[in-house]
Image (cartoon, rainbow, N blue to C red):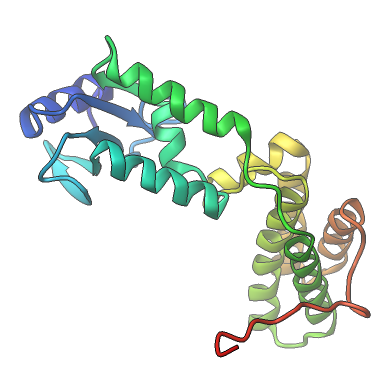
Length: 240
């Protein structure tokens, strides 16, 4: 692992993409959260070929994830981030370290990405929130009634994710996956990620479901309560 990930990332960009007019090092590598397993998430903006692509390679022993775009494709994938309510690419630019173009282009892209993040995700339709409430309630009942230890373990993990997604969706907050999901949840409720994980461990270690049931019910109560009877979701008919 390089002692200076920013210097290494900058050198790799200059060697591989000398035509780049902007580049950023995002993710954990340039932060205090960096670990020996952190890769380098590098966003590169080119005016044309060979963009656009995403590729993972190893350089000088360091794993590197390349995100290579044109200005138009970068904004296209930003729009996908917004539509999915998850913002990895937006954050790599808005919160990353400029490697190329810090005197102009990179600052412009950072400001644009930051403005999109600050604006927040699109307001969810009531049906979206109701459907997530319904799914979470259904999973909770499955956990209560299940007797198979393997299924119980899977249900506990799925419930932690479902409750987290529900809290963020109902609060119209950006969501995430992996290690970033508890960070987003903690922005709403700093104690909830730890409470959910402790409750999940109780299920896996001792078979005690009650702490997880209580934690998920607390999330449901914050967003309107459990939802079963009366739930209705309008369908679509592409043939009409």
